Length: 405
Image (cartoon, rainbow, N blue to C red):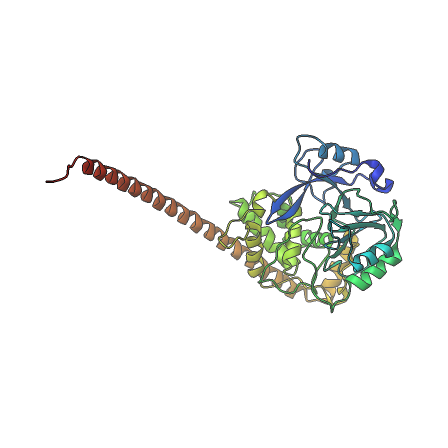
């Protein structure tokens, strides 16, 4: 345990009373911390979309405070059915002095609800009751979320802010409108408190017009023609693939389509899947890239078609249900050409299969080259040993001679 774990008295009762808690463990990569969700009951991987991997506050805190545990903190999961919205403000506070950027101070004062300092000490978490307005939910160092994500909770309350979570729908809408929703003021943020590190790729398209909220994206992917395949991969089932790496690429290829080629969101989603493992953040390439970064880069580069919302669904709702999904599918089938949609889906699936085949061939070739390299190294070791033996023999012969007079 390396983080200060909050007690019940340090947090609002409305959070403590909900069984939406998990733990998280921290991994460092290139000086940045990746936060991986942990099931408080079993200590295994947790998912923000699977309530069976969450617990009550006490269970989560008990695991995080054990002497022998990988968990270093606790987190609160946001769900559709809950009233809470999290506002994550990054890189806006000087840890040593406590000075705060003007824009962050403005947001905190407007929302006027429970606020805590983030684990890094360089940002803030604001918790309010309300619903996110339609549209994008992140921009720059600001991110807002209410479902399928989790806040790392510190209990480090900001003096001068309320100690309870307040209903702040109108201020939330105002903050969203002023700081997040304008479409002409730059790209979305690639940072996320609840996911840790994110991945960027020079080959990715501009995803701003096609982004779906995470939970809606997952539901749409499950309901698609290859939904069963996606569901199996999402649960971490690799049974249909010869290796875990092939399953990773298959899931990333599907997510590349649904995220519109957004490498940051793709990385965030993959970390929530059952396929996530430590190898994802390991450096495997000469340029310093990690396995996860290259997998995402290749998946996006190999995807020729990306999801585009129908014309009448330009704004992405963050409140999504199965009924909403059915309605949207009926509207999309009514407004579009069903045969054309099926053809495009078939072409995309064929492309995914083609990529998976190429990946298998590449992995086989890599294994062959590795074997060849190891054989060459062994041959070189033998030659060096032979040269060393010859050198020692020559030295012994030199020592047996005497100067000539």
